[in-house]
Length: 426
Length: 100
Image (cartoon, each protein chain N blue to C red):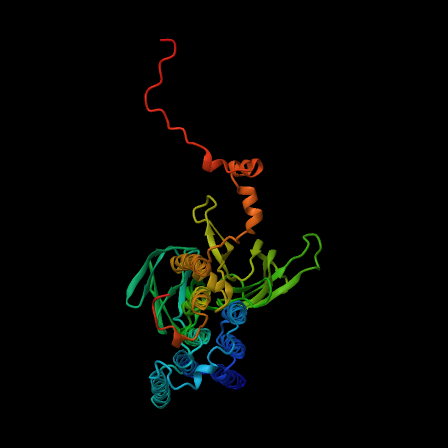
């Protein structure tokens, strides 16, 4: 409701300032009213989740461009350039006024029509399609085939394999895992628009299981932090805890990070500051027996990580090998926030590089154009005649004025001899 | 959340006001400012559609429009200055001849 009130007030202010811009006879007043309209539009950009555009609008539009306008108005002294023309009957193009009014009325009629006919097509904001990825955390089962939506999408999907996020249509989807031997298992996942999730295949005492972890890949709002979700797929303990063991030599400086995570359950997201951490999964019973360390885990800022605790079969030279716990980390960068400089910069440098370069070329052309259009030939200022002539008078005239008679008029020009000079010494 | 339609309507009203300014005002600089108002209205509509579809391409277009508008203002005002030098007026009713 607050947002709607802000929208109405800002929008009304923008329209009123635009009308006043049209009506004021002084061009400087018009420019200042246009600044008000632009600041209102910058505020509306903020309401529209476009903070970067709001800043650009204020700095470039309300700042640079309007400074240029006001500078030119004052330079030309044209604040009231048209007032004397407004009342004169012999204005040219008098048909502009009825045309403009007709256009305005028809467009406003279209606005009213859109209100009358408004369906629900534009009433809600569209969310992007959900995205899922698959992870095989069943360390003791061998490879499986994954069927999805009536077809096999992955063959030989073995332990520690994972897919990228892929986009699917919202709805209820069934994933089927077909192991090499044994019955296929299936799970149904309900996905709504805007969701991100990981389908995890793990094993417990009863055999293969599916787990689903909904993940939040939005920007981590906390400063220099990451979001970590832990999924427990470790069948040998009833529940596990995640601790920071602190110093190796001191027993009682452990810090509990996550307590009592049951099998097949994902934790709430943990917000962790960036840096390297040394954590440890422990059995959640009283003995707090260590399961597996999470050593030198690099927490990067603005990541949304998933840590899966599972068990894997490890070949140690014996016939069957041994089963040991393992932690799988899926490190995913969180999406840049919508409309922020990071998201716009990313788009600009990926999808819109070519338009950006064309724009740079256009700006260069505009620069050259502005220079060419306003360039004036520099006319040299004429010097005072006497000073100039005294300097540049030929030497002949100087001599003539000193000796008292005109040398140039009386001097006879000797004709250039046309015959060949006699050869010397012939 | 305010409906997208409300933003589009506001953008339409501002665009109409800009169009009227272009057609009714005789001062060339004011005509230019009205064009800027029209561009601003378009930007508002683009940002509203970008939010509606949850994709930032609309923001990119607004960014491009703002940049092009800056270039256009630089060239346009240079033109106005050049015209003012030769005609000593920037009333567009008096600028109906192509010859300089």
